[in-house]
Image: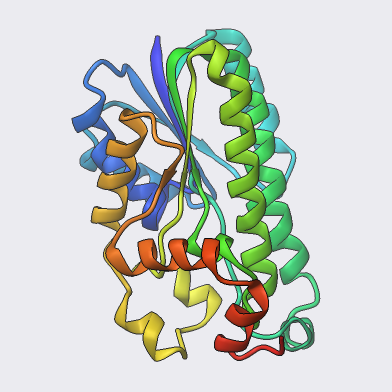
Length: 254
């Protein structure tokens, strides 16, 4: 059985991957979707061209990993694509966020880094030559970001992990692509807080374009997918400019 696995599938970019995937991979038998909100996952049956199997669960709890590992053992599927789309952010200084919610930043690290890694580890034995892994990173991974410090750091982990894993899996013919969008118009900002940077508001994009480019870049075997000219410029600038200058420009102290 050929399948795809998508985390964070109940909303935003993860949901959009499920909607578009059937157009790119017509030989899939099922898409296994993982997220907390089961009622939102049920809706995907009407939106996807591929049959959906629902694994309702919180990636911050152990039960969902046990459920996934049991299914993988019992059914031994051929995972053609893994999309790690789950994650969240909180804007504000480290101290301000701590005052508001003492656990939020630790949970951000747990979901954005540890959960992404654990899902990858679970699925790796079921990937075969030609399989793809798409890891949702962010343009925030390109450089440190004051008032987005922990989120940017978690996405830097995702980008680094993805590139290293790509090199390791090359001999197996498995491709890993890190997707690094800028601000995307999704439910993400209901949790993180609305953008207060006017430049970021100007470059906010729709998830459909980000996902389409990610799937195309993954199919082409690219290591990184960056959508839109502003984020491509940001990526180039992060390679050329010292971080102290970028921090100063973004309002931090060099």
